[in-house]
Length: 382
Ligand code: SF4
Image (cartoon, rainbow, N blue to C red; front, side):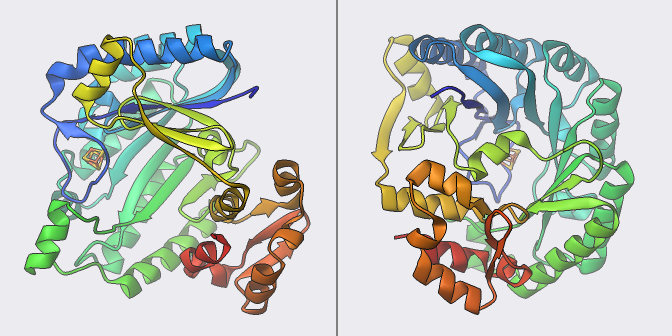
């Protein structure tokens, strides 16, 4: 494999948000130092084993990468650069929580080569932020954005959430407007979902919080599509928009996932994929550190994908890309068969229903298909 995108998982947060089911923990600060050391070991071992391959994108996610010091983040990125051939124009992103921002950390990250920042703003309404258990206010989110700019970041994403219980269309619109005023290069919008085992799921089950209203969420999504289009954003993926213009501001790292290309994930619970096999690390932070400190692999398990499953998965992730969809040439290059030959029945049925359409290079969702995308994806899976 000649090139790999790299994901680095930082499983620490200041406080757990009640809706979150990611592999991340509050109160484990004592493990941060050994965790960084373990990451360095894992990164170096892979780089050596793979012969220092090229890396077009690096993404630090979590969790909250900015719970680590600027120095620690730079140490990890330094290990990636030593072990891999990080391309000179590589996209190097870190997620950041607006409540953990300080200008020194941002400047140190910029100096080390981070060139994209993804800020977990979620809302510009303080009541909604309080409901979501976020550690920052709307004002702090705005400050974080300006701090990022002052530190030299010129490629910034803001995450926003909609479909919150009791959220009104008017407050959602105000959050969108505030985001547009800041003119970030990229926006990711996610509907709140109630994940099993989270405090939010218990509150909904107890009746303390009404369940999210799917119809209201669909209306908010439609509103966002209109507002962002008028503001000059390209809706290139179901949940993602990039500022239109001369430069392409789409997230190159996430494009790797949607195009079903290979990636390496480092850290607790991180997943990797080489096109045919998926493997993942042990999730507990202490277990991950232990394994690496004993010189063992942190890989917990793996799954070999048969061709039929891989085809379905490529459709599932690729159709998320609203402009390019799944290009026939890419599908043929990977599986040696055309989209039409692989899925004639499924494509025929869904074209008739107006959910997918052919365009110059391949197959994509129609606007009607966006709204029932999960049902379309399921049709392609074995
Ligand atoms: S800050 Fe992000 S990763 Fe951490 S608990 Fe909240 S939603 Fe989850």
